[in-house]
Image 1 (cartoon, helix red, strand yellow):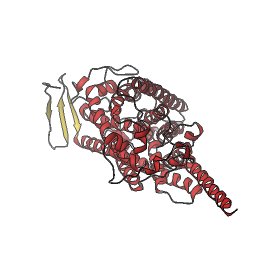
Image 2 (cartoon, one colour):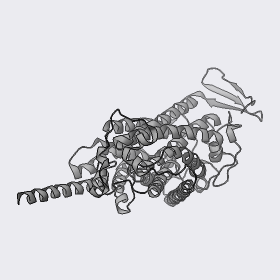
Image 3 (cartoon, helix red, strand yellow):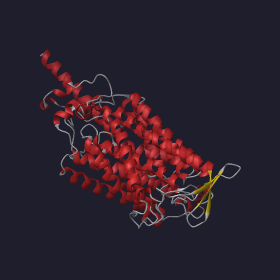
Image 4 (spheres, one colour):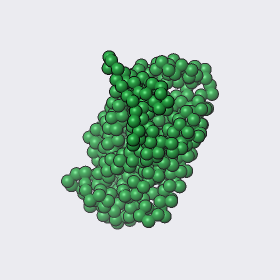
Length: 493
């Protein structure tokens, strides 16, 4: 880019930009399209600290600051990686079926030419918009480190994971040369590159790190320490998701508007669905449950947001909220410690969204942008093979992310200073104090953690709520009540 001059003019009446390319041709961009994508970029950016607040509120007080740190540091790390070679690896014109080349290394030559995503915006704008997707994805995944992961190695992990996991999956999904794109897979805004890849990576991180101190005991039978942070995080995520899905139209057109409508509807229905499922167990109207369901609905609608109508969004919300709620049982069935239920919400939610997209996608909705006129649609358009394409893409995303994330973690395990697990003492005093020397609050109590391990008896944490978490907490409450009654009877005797 250094020393590279471009000829750009803004002809009257002022709503267009003309750019002369190296081959002498001229391309015209609508400034309204560009303004919307710039706005959408900022909307997706605000989701990143929003996710930090959401995670922070779900954890214990002594670990709350660490997730805020993660959200900002990962954003900064990926921004550099994306400039360095990430954009080129994902969206190079010379890509093969799996990965791009280094044609745009250091963003060289990424200027005013039509973007690979849409001819309606220049490559430079497409680059910064996609940077936000690349940044939020590892933030989702690194939530798997919560309460027991070192912070320093996060920067190394983020750079490696973005290069070896996110960029290849983004390439095969969104680059026209990618195998899933050529196969006909439908993923409007990131079901596989963002949610399935990050949710599965969080599962791999949880398996690698092992269980927290006191797992399976009452020490971890806690509820989210700050409901206000959970709500604030959800608000920022929901707000930003209009840019996440609506901006993926890459133009200010009717398809982008439709994506915003189904996004809001799926989130609303998903939140209500999850809250009602939780109410059947506790007879309490949980705002944490509503927020968790809203996120699940948003995750589910992401791949289909530019392909489905409003009635389908209701199904996305109900099915996404239900399946993700009951998927919180998975960590108890398979004995892994995913304390933020990231795999249940993002991994499973992304798979649900991909499958439902194969069923409910409509060619008429895709044509709202005036460009996508040959899309065959899904089952509603009698394109029966589409579900197979969606399943193939989902399975590839899960398997690739799980294997590659595990390999990265174990390579780092043997590199000096890169091991991800904190020691027991640091886990007791909290990641905030041990790793940052700073707190999210002025006062953090850790006395309850200082008891001997032999005294720890109880149930796992509540996480986001959900059938699995709540039923285990209720079982522990019953056991504790029975234990108290037995002690009282013995004292009476």
